Each structure stands twice: as C-alpha cells, then as structure tokens.
Picture (cartoon, rainbow, N blue to C red):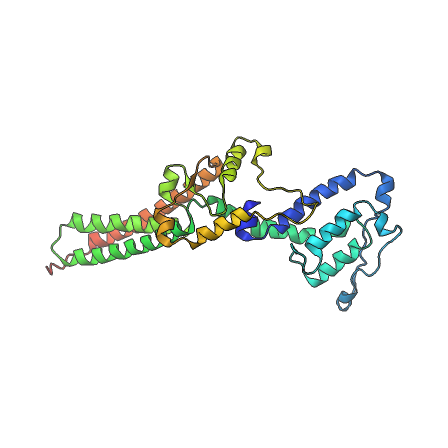
Amino acid sequence: MNYLTYVERNSENLRFYLWFRRYIQKFDELSEEEKAKSPAWECPLLKEKGKAEGLCEESNNRTCPSQQPFRTEVDRITQMYLAPLSPFELNLSGRDRKQVLNALATTTHPSAFKTVLPQVEQSLRQQSHPNFVRHALSTANKGRILAMRWGGFILILVAVALAVGLSMGKVPRAVRIIIPVFIMFFGVCSMLDGQRSVCLVLLTFGVRDRFAWETETDCEGENAIIECDLEKASTICFDIFDGPIPQDEDREVNIKKFEERGFLSHVLFGWKRLRGLDPEVQRLQRLIVFQNVGISLMVAGILAIILAVTPTANMY
C-alpha cells in the first residue's frame, strides 16, 4: 500500500478493491429480509451499438433507496471513488461511470459494482503488481542507479580505448588482453545492474537503500512480514469508512527533502539501508545478478578473443 500511495500515487484501486471484498462479506451476512431490500442489479442488454447512450435507464426499484442496507456507506464510497471529480476518483470511462452511478442510485447490492470491479482488477494485475515487483527487486535509489549506469558506460569506453591503444604499441599480449577485458567485464556488469536497479555491492551485504517514503515503522513492518506476523506488518490504515484517506505529511516532507538532495549526496552520503529482506526477493535479486555476470563474461570473452587474434601494430 505504501508503494501505491507514495510511488505510483495510485492507491485508490487497491483501497476500493479491499473495501469491496469486505463489503461482499458484510452483505452476505445480512438476513434474507434485509437482502430483499437491495435486489441484484440487472442492466438491460443492448442489441444495437447505437443505443450506448441509453445504458441502464431501467432498474428494479421495489424498495426506497434510503431504506436499503449500507446505503450511507455506499453513498460515501460513491462520493469518494465514483463521482466525477471525487478526491480518489477511479479511472473509468464516462459510459461505465454513468452505468455504475445509475445502478447505485437504486440498489446497494454488490452486483451494482460489476462494471467497476473488472477494470480495477485489471489495473492491479497488469499495471500495479508488475511495477511493484520491479520496485521490490530494486536495491538502490535513483542516484545510485544513475551512477551505476554512467559508471558502467564510462568503463566500457575506457576498456575499448585501452584495447585499441594497447594494441597499437609494443605491449605484452597478456597485458593488452587482461586489462581491457577486466575493465570491460566490470563496465558491462555495472551498466546491467544499473539498468535492472540491483546493486551487487549492497546485495552482497544483504542490504538495500531505503526509499524516500520509508520510515522506521516500515522497517519494523518488513521484519514483521518476514516473521509472518501480518498483524504487526500493516503500516497503513485500511479503515476508510469514516472519511477521506489520511495523508501522512511527515512522509511527504521527507520525500520532498530526499528529491532535493544532490546527486553526490544520493551516492556518497546519507545511506540508509534496511535489513531483513524477504528470502524470495533475495533469490530473485541473486538470479538477476548472476544473469548480469553471465552476460558480462560473454562480452568480456568476446573482447578477449578479438584481442588475442589481433596482431600488434608496434607503433610505439
């Protein structure tokens, strides 16, 4: 949840999804008499494409909407997530928004949300979850990632320059092969690590940089998750029934200060690392590093073969 709130700035989908799953459970616990006050929503099927503007104009309205169960809660959720220009407006098309608002105006049955839930699930599964996985695998902040990329690129240029320069002079074969190949290996490895946001040095010590939005509470939460204590791991309040989602001003201030820091400050100073990484995350990180090392060895091996078969120019 912290990732969606402070990185993607798109936490409303997950919050709405979690609320809806709880709402279904509460609705199922109602008596049959209470459920009868909120019949299932039935949207008339359209047989012609030209009738799209007439979506869901008819509904079964046997009971006064104000007497339906959970009407106050549903109205609050509508104002928070579904109404146009709402504070946590879901990304819905005008057609779907009109349909769900018409449905909720007549019933509080969970089926009234059937046009919203598939879109929310699709966004979480196809966008937020893959982005979160990539974020979780990262061990370095943006400054360190940029340093690894540019450092690797510079090392590659130095390796190529040395390979050409040493081949022009009367340098022992072993020297003109080993030095450029050695530098090329670290250059390619550093560049690939930066591209995939995994720092080999930090991973070796089993640590990672703390991101701008993380606090000491989050550190305790990570350790609690690893110890399978899920009750202690929650650092975000999911109870959204009494009003808008609270904003953590301290986190926002920390994020702003973190972003204002200079490049060297990100790379050389103020490192804050977190221990207690999830074993599965560590396994994937090691796999990424091994892949990068393998690719680097292949590139370095190709350079070594080229230098081995290239005769020296003996120009100096």
